[in-house]
View 1: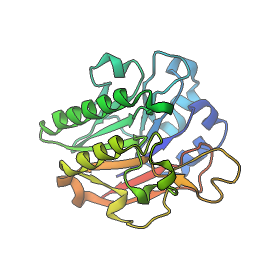
View 2 (view 1 turned 60 degrees about the horizontal axis):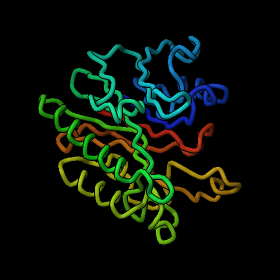
View 3 (view 1 turned 90 degrees about the vertical axis):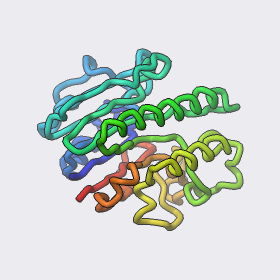
Length: 253
């Protein structure tokens, strides 16, 4: 089974670029998108059902903001919108698809923002999503969580760690939460295969930044420890343009 994840920074903008051809080419069974920035009633069939995919949406109440969606070739056993917490669900941050042997949780973590204005909100979301994952695990089924975490876990996960220690996405509190999360029975899929630096999933739009690979690794596939043996690969696709993020693709045995 192949699952792709991509923060598209606006599904309508991405569709005007190469999103649909990319979907056809990647051949994923499931495609998760973050920052969809649209509700289904704003979209045509070309975006709702490209290449025969079913799609499911969790849009923010605020127009043009946040939002996640899941495209699947095969209908899931069940789709759950949100995590039953209005302060997060109103922003369209989580959608879950249940399959026969695992839950797939597609999520867009909050950004802590300048001056750390939303750090408290971000950390509360982090703990809430962890509790939600543990609730899924209690159903005796494996869990995969993917998406834009808005956290660079360690110094290896961004080009300039020293100069970013006080910046959103690499704050000590964010890194500490990520470390704690992974220590509580979860595995960073990409790092199972690639322990090396210079692998990123987000680059600023400033001229030359992406070409020089001055980036951050903010996008992840994380799975519960017991499911690790099913991992076949997790790769980045930095050559795929159309967003300030690149796709991440996971294959399961």
